[in-house]
Image (cartoon, rainbow, N blue to C red; front, top):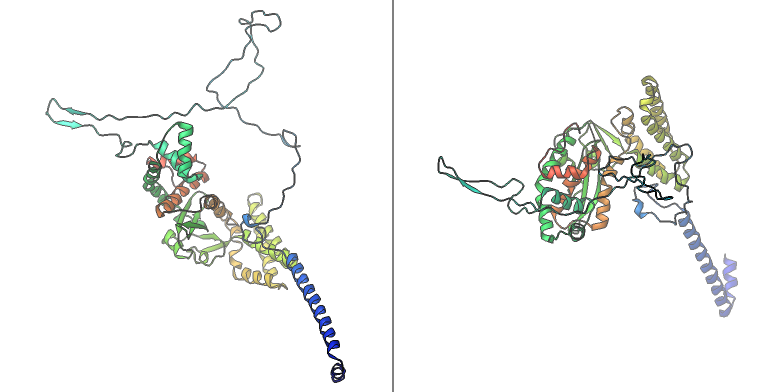
Length: 458
């Protein structure tokens, strides 16, 4: 080093400047090479998508879909195929020949053979019906007392719309969802019915009590359930972030909108109820459930494992996915397997999972997942022990899907009462859907005070 310094001291100023400029050029070239390598590495690393994380599909990078080949009409090879079932006709049009098209002979008295049928479904023009209740007074000839006849209950003061029309207004505005302005245009264009914006708002407000009563009935049924699934999604109220919670089972679905995402919401909805099993993701507030056991959502775990597979080509994560899928498949085949054989297979899956968790993967992502699975090892295969417990929380996410669409379409709610009415209405409609009931008729029954649900879902 000292000899090199002495050599440099003997150089003149111009020579030193040339050396410095040359080194600067090399340094810039190397720095650019490092930047390019880092960018290439970043591009090669897999990004989080809806397939390997909890990101919604709307945030995935969209690619041009491949062109679908044109298929011939009819069933696929090996399938019998189905078509629309014929309905009982309300009107029959007889297509007979009065005259022969060849020689003009009279055929009206001849026997005709039926050779085909075609059906067409249509609706008559929709015309509103105006019902007027006239109230009278009468004097009794025996006691000479004057009495007045009451109006029917549906003709309450200020209620100028019938139950079916109000049900349609609420159904269009809340369930689909359409703005008041669009509902106003539909009623005017389709029915020739002119309704002011304020009248539409008042119709929705009048439904609040009936919907709240039905929603509380659903809430009590959820509280009495042995298995409850829960999830939440973001919702906006007057520009502020709120959360729409769902509590559901196979027949009952209850929605609740709150400004917080913490466990106090679960306490508020569930009260003193203690279900046997709680199905959810691993959100901290969900882990404070009141149930005796927890079934974690395996769909979430499979997606998280997929990220480790994509990012690190991790064999441990790949094999963990295989074990979880094997367990899910075993649960689906429960009814087809003898009880003794099923118990042996459950034991085999459980033991294989325990052995797999003793192995330590090499990358940090898989190590984090391993620690999670060890912590919740008792919460992984509850569904294999109980037939009424699902392996995933997909039912909760499916119940929230329409609400997510509504949030994207409308941007949220402007009033607290509007959010409350929507949560109660969605509880009614989703419960009706799961019980196989017609949605609009169920809504009409609720608004008119008729019993729409019972504990058996019949």
